[in-house]
Image (cartoon, rainbow, N blue to C red; front, side, top):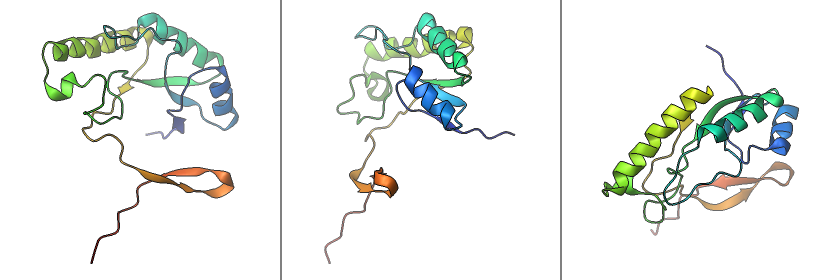
Length: 147
């Protein structure tokens, strides 16, 4: 078994890929540039995936994964596409078909995996914490309890 350093940083463009390579990152979760996502299409096309894969390969980086555009880390209450989680038909069936299209397109483009974040609450965080070198850490601080 091999372990790789990778990233899911956006966007997957020349500048980001050069940054990754410079810092020893050879594997990425990619995000196709300039997708034509809309209310009727929430999946990456084969062409978008192939262009992203080719750009990664030009920089010596492996496109190991892409993200599913319709399942982001947002609360189900504000997510633009929540039909799968809420069982809202006929949108649910449409979104399932989009996932099936993603499987087919990833297979044809040679992208071995995709990721999604199916959650109901979104990503819960409090204010960021200052970190070393001026960085900011994503934070969850347990609220104080009243005694």
